[in-house]
Amino acid sequence: MITLFSSPSCTSCRKARNWFDGHGIEYKERNIMSSPIKKEELRKILSLSLEGTEDIISTRSKVFQKLNVDLEEMSLSQLLELVEKHPSLLRRPLIMDTKRLQIGFNEDEIRAFLPRDVRKMELRHAQMMAGI
Image 1 (cartoon, rainbow, N blue to C red):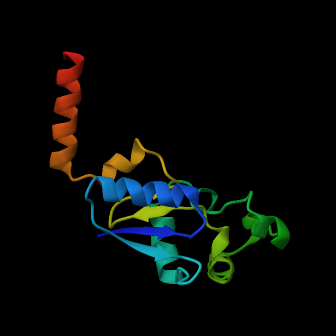
Image 2: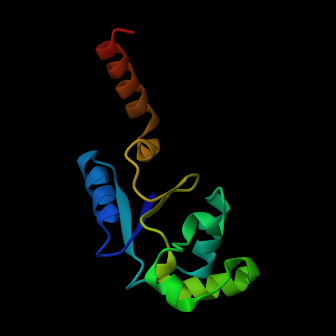
């Protein structure tokens, strides 16, 4: 099952939701402000990320600026506690299933969440349209 970690005011989260709805893909949405991500979930997210904390933490967020923390100096447990207390530190949306993680909305990258047979069919269609 795909999980869409979002927040109510996030434009990119709405784009992701609309994309999944438009493609008929089932997902569960989780508002990280009203139902914060737990430490175990954060560990899973970090394990799927390419760059770890650099991928998931929004260093441009107002909360990050106010906290004035150095991520390089924090232990993993300190980071997990900080994000649990301040979920708005996370970049959004976070989209994940058991094997994949997408951070932010990117229309090309989100296609990875389409079932394989649908992706193959779309590729064949695109190739036919291009005359390949």
